[in-house]
Length: 102
Image (cartoon, rainbow, N blue to C red; front, side):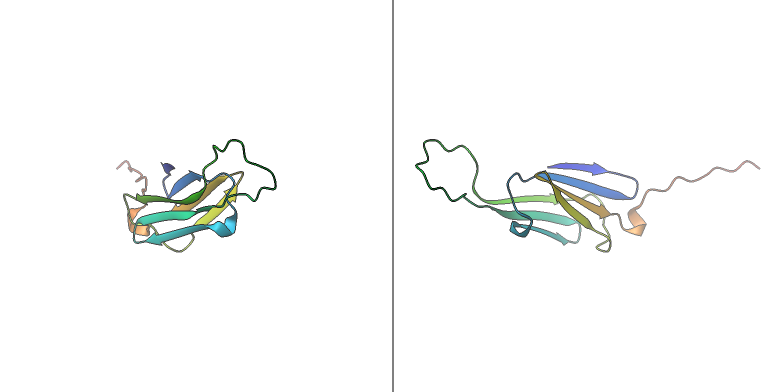
């Protein structure tokens, strides 16, 4: 899992290869983000001679450093990478303050 802090949001990326959208759950409680799901075993017709692919339940858990706003959270699954964009709460956003000359 990668976490990138931007001025107005956090962007979390988690690799979930082969997982369908309906098999992934994203949940936010306060500033705790949990991504969980299941990699289901593929149905086979022949004899499996070797198996190295992961199957079963998985869970990623991270506590974000600042409060996030539950409104505007965006989650997308593309090419086996789940990207969750979590906007920072207004009080936690970074703001550049302009210094004025007298």
